[in-house]
Length: 259
Length: 294
Image (cartoon, rainbow over all chains, first blue to last red; front, side, top):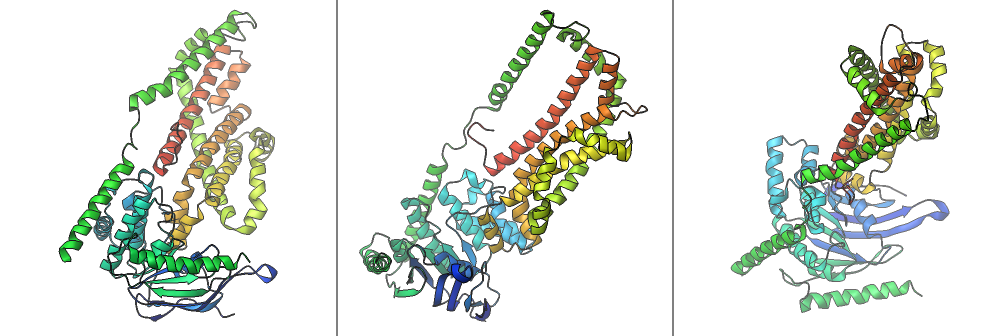
């Protein structure tokens, strides 16, 4: 198999998957996690990947983030683009303050101290945490930690944001508010977002386009545009209708594995 | 529409700060510093008082002759004299220098060894279990060999102190690096930390609590090895705490002997407390203190 990764050819902010295949293990024990996944995400587009367990959603994000290598196919990103990745856990550094966490990518890029301070303040304002810069992660609530993680990822100044069920561990109220926040930040910064979730309503609330992945191996089996005007509410009839349709497809896919 | 979205975002702002205020309310309350200090200290003093009372009771029972087992009053009286004598401070200076030099060398060796074993597969296979085996070896068992190699000299003591303490430090490093959460490593890599930067920004700070625990244990071993060494390797021209303990036994000066033991205990305890405080400070920063605040 050819193993081409991240060829910088496309426009800034776009993500293109060309027949991406991922195999774990070797020989008899080899597991096909992703099978020929092709997907074009336009700059500034918000795409939600939905699927049941074992559909390789997280694998896909790891590949796009460059934390793992494709077994076949290629992933094309804009010139010099390093996508930012967010997880279900905030994955904050517990030894550092909120400011210190957000500062890490800036330090790694070699920004001078005064510019770092300015950027950190700006990013904390963006996620409404200006008053909490000196706190440590364990002093914050789950939703606040996830916002720190978002600010830290935004500090990468990358046009592409990869999110792996980032709100999966939060209560419904906090999640609703973070949906509003993410939508606002996405709009302000013109980000391309590839958002993985198993929560179909969340996908219908956020996405420009929902892409459904099959399980074992992961293949794209369905894709739909969400033409509901923004700002949306997760409990609006339009969002619910789209969620219902995607849920039906998802159930059919899950049922296929029960036979 | 424009005014509508404006009030919409203002509403969201209010909701967010409201939610934040509700969720972190009441998280940072605890008893006052003085009260905590007192509740941590009084049981220690009570236990000390009971130990001294027990000692006095045994003396009064007449189990041993007073020249072999003096009572607390006699010993504390002698300790008072000892504390103002130049012998103590000269001895303590020698002992402290040996402890510092030996422990520093053990830390250097332990850090390098631990890092090597943690990162290089071959080294782990070759040395991993040997380090643990070395740790179980009573350091006093090294002295006959050390004396053969270096005679009754500073080097003999140094050799055993390093051998005693380095494996604990190395194990702390190995343990720390092994248990760095993989998620933090992935996050660090995504934020742009590769190679040496990954160590600087993620692995080293994440491993720090385990490394400090290793240092603390390493110190305990170094101090024990040093005392064993000073008892065995008596250098006539240079006084030390251990040498004075040996002389006290040879001259049957029981009160002085026990006074020296108290000094050894207190020094060991003081350094251990310093490591304990560092350990606790780190865990407080990391947010991994347990319910009791330990």
